[in-house]
Image (cartoon, rainbow over all chains, first blue to last red; front, side, top):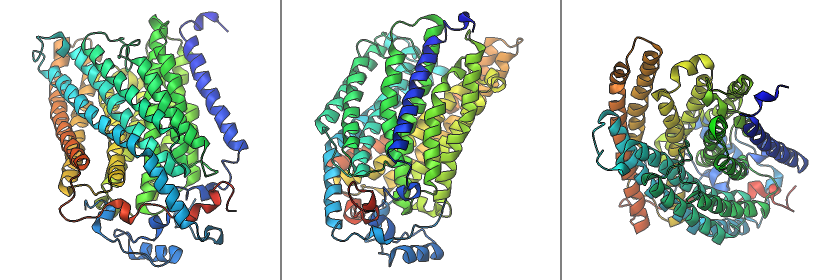
Length: 87
Length: 498
């Protein structure tokens, strides 16, 4: 390795290495602690019941039926405000 | 991968948990309320301040004799004040508020050490005031994205960001769910990455070429490892919530997150193509920039497929309208960035207004639009009342939407004309400047529209804080769809479920 390639790049090389090692460490921690288990189910984490069973006015008939099949009868929005009232 | 709604399974049916979960959620919201509201208020003030500086700087480019009597109002100071007010004042303050609000909801617990988060927010904004005053007084550090005085202002950012980070990391550590949703990953990573890059970027011992390299290491990562992760976290939270369906592919979302983490930090050196740095260093950066196609496409495809055949939702939800605009801009700006990193393209675009347009496509069309959308969702839930006026929301969206097109298109074209003209040895500098003039005027017209939109938004936020209610009798979001009966996630609760 030519040492004259280092003076202007050593700091950035070390900085990128630090960031990379941080990311690798957290990745292996995530792996060991089961964060990659049941991945598809994790998509439900932010969702609440109301997110699923309230009717969406923009959905097609087929999409509406799909929602009813999955989550039971949907509730109509109680007021227009539920979507921000900014139609 | 699936685009269909998930079936309910027996393990999700956990009776008698609804009220408990509701209670958890309400306590989570209450715990973050004060900090989030103040963060939003601070951010809107900085939005107005930054807009005023930006507009002045833009007009000065085609009216160079305007406001030149005072050194405070010269282009060099005003332009730096604009960038810092927008990146650290508006966007970062808003991101602190959105993160503080979102994390307790996603990990099902109260915000821990909220006093630290609140103190951190104040420290951050004191740093902002000192930094902007310092820049206007002529005490800039002279480094891109790091202009605020190193010894006056930056310690406040370190302490402030550290205190908010402490609160968020404590909350995540004390979480009531086993798994971390992708939005939590993004926010967690942002609050780990940012202190590292900020301290390295501000380290006072670098000079010459090394200083330039460290500067662009910081400046590029400030967008990619600080602003980007929190905004993608918001997009991954709000899009499924509003559509009432989980994201298209959770695997793809994780692929996007981890590849961003592994590839992005190598990108910054492409800003120094042609500079006196080792060729291997620049080439490595160009290759890493090309690899960014993976996380960008992962995010873009995932969000598009989640929204697929449901674009009608954009007519109903202002949050979705702003956030989808921002998500599309993320894909565009990232792909544009990949191409601008190639030597052949960079040779034309470097030192031109194409770079300025590119930065605004990122920091405005992506980051700012997603923060607008997030605030439209969060504020009614925190204040317990609906936005006052549909018309004000529409005015806001259309002025900033059209404003961005009017801003970005002429400026990009002008930048290309500038690049071609500067590459021509027979062109004089005066000819180059004259060729850019229409684009610079277009930029000012676009900037004016953006500022009008910001004033409309700030007025609307002011009405909300004052307690105004909509005339039509719309009900607040939180009374209808708040929240939380979390039966579908019972199996993720620590110590419970399957």
